Image 1 (cartoon, rainbow over the protein chains, first blue to last red):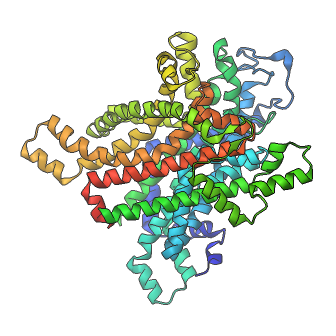
Image 2 (image 1 turned 120 degrees about the horizontal axis):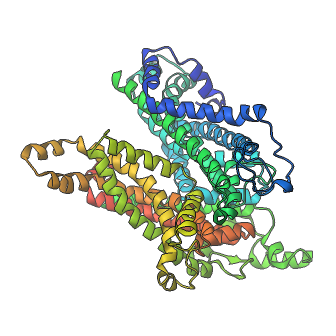
Length: 302
Length: 317
């Protein structure tokens, strides 16, 4: 097997589309549908997506031009969540800010999922010294606090949304790589994989049909957690002043701006964005847990 | 045991080596050069060439890396342009303060998280378990700085119990004399750490409760207190030893935020300031030191675990 075959970017997608055939998968989906916490999480994510992406269409506000005649107004009928220190409508800004926070979380997790799956699959399948070197690199990157890596990488470049996504994606794949490698090591030694080898299946067929298909559940679960982590890291980055500059908005940035009004009692600048972050992060964690439990049942019932 | 020790130490050294390669690579590909940073933008090409020759920056990249490694091994972490001081002396000043913050947060977090996880496992799927799980979920999902802000709003702005700023003493001893200022920063980092630990502690205790020796102990008629303290607590705390090492990078990330928020001049605050000033030697020195602390911490945790639980060293050797 060459590494080029493994670097096929559509590998997880291709495997996923061919998946729902066995009874185990239907059963896992049914289990998922019965998990109340998972459904609450899923509903919250859908609500947050609608709020952020459909909200500004139904409730358009000017989030580009500051209006200094309207600063720090308390919530009222016209401004349900008041206005901030440069006169932006806070409710409208929460929606626009949610777009970038969710985009960063989802895109960074997708990048991390792809890198992590490929890295772990290559290390586990090839084995030997390559495996050792690749996993020591993962260990080394895990030893450096994530926030340090993010700060170093963003200090080099200008903080645009794309840069933040790439940087967060580049540091979030480590756990996925470890999990995928561990699973590939187990699956590789299973009898049906050896049988496939005996029947003369090619290495890439084995990787796609047996390995990737079996690790995809783990990758999806880990990716949901990484969405949550990326949203939190993005908020931390904005707090440290390394997020995209205004008029671009994100939830972490809104909280950071509210920091100046802690002693003024302007609660609408301190709570709403934080609640949005907590709800979204908890929701992604609940969904991840639910998917993981559903897969556990599948493994046990087989 | 000695075989395990040798192999595990070898791994740790390899990881540290790779950390230095990564840090060197980032340092090298950063825009701007040490010569420009030190000599200023008006420096003549001749002066820059002379500086580069004097400091070895004109050598081949592998040679530069070896020189960097040589300096590191001799404890030379570089020189800060921004603070006009060696990185080593800056860290010597600020590291104890961060150690105070991180160390006390760890201790308090463990004191709370371990009984919390055990209680959850004993009351598994009861109201108490669900409540505590929900709390740790929310604690985990809160941005660290927002948690800190909420504590400031509650305990400083409203109740006037604690100051909103960390202690500003010159030394750790002076900071210890100002305990009330330490409360909010430590509490913030503690809550974050509890959220990190309690889920693992619960899972570990649940796992232990399913073991045969627990059933045997119950069958023997061991009292509930003895069962919890002797059999359950001891065995389920063991995996947490490893978690202490593994969680260090995450907690240090939290410490950067807490120090920046509470204006507490430790390593995290230094790193944050250095980011704004593009003071790369400080950033690099800090990264190497924290990574080394994590690698050594993991090594010690693993060795302690293997010593406490013979099954580990037999399984892996």
